[in-house]
Image 1 (spheres, rainbow, N blue to C red):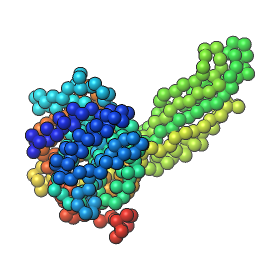
Image 2: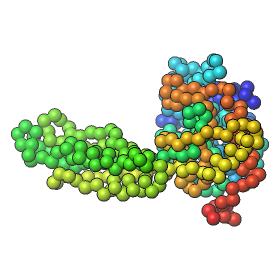
Image 3: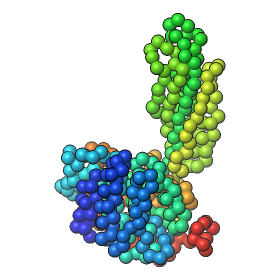
Image 4: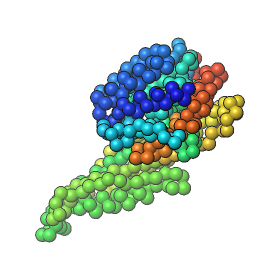
Length: 370
């Protein structure tokens, strides 16, 4: 198995697929399709949404387990020239190997020959899944469990919880005036922005795992003009839907501090939280014990994935089932080779277990929850 896994990973890594380059993503999709077809024995559906290519394999008559991954990366074209694919000292390197092309290869080997699996590979995850979100949610709603092949947390830990993400744009309107001659006639958007940034930051609740972070900002036009406008972005991470909703309500309740200023709030929740699925965690631990493997460690992480969407759709979700390694999005991105085969075997056994003894949370029509 390991030899085939490494060959598949190399082919995937050596086809660069930066998310913003539609042609590159389309070329990568063809490589993914070729490898997946060779392993699964069936061609995928090619689903092009907003110019981005996603792939879906249906294995068997009725989808019951969803395997989910993406083939786009953050690495621009030409990255292979300075970070070529390599295997040395038990470590595999190359752009996108850890996040998450090794996970794709693992998914193909785990799904082969299984009856009742949908394997969905999207092409815009690194952009926030703007075109594939509905596709992911629709697939999740008609399956009993979602297994996400994103890379593991430190040391190979599964990602059992991910924070939800909200993104906001706070836009300030003031009034311009000459900063030297008559500043009192202006309404200073920079000052209003500062008041609002402090108010927004205060919405965080570290004790609950909620961060509310003002990020990029801009205000004004010239150095001698009272700024008439400005804006700043806000990144919110929350462990629970209740916290995400609390912050959303507070953001929309913001009011100007300076007389005559105006505030407009854009954006909102982007990804719901992925809250831990006890049933899937219990399953994988039991499967690992049967295989004579140690129980996988678990981790709660702040970063989001498409697993947030499957969990938000009400489907039990387990994330971080992909490769063990590190350096996602960084120059030292790498995969440890030694765990690859065993981790793929564990994934394959978990899928088989879920197909043999389903998590029965679908209605008789297969389109809703009990």
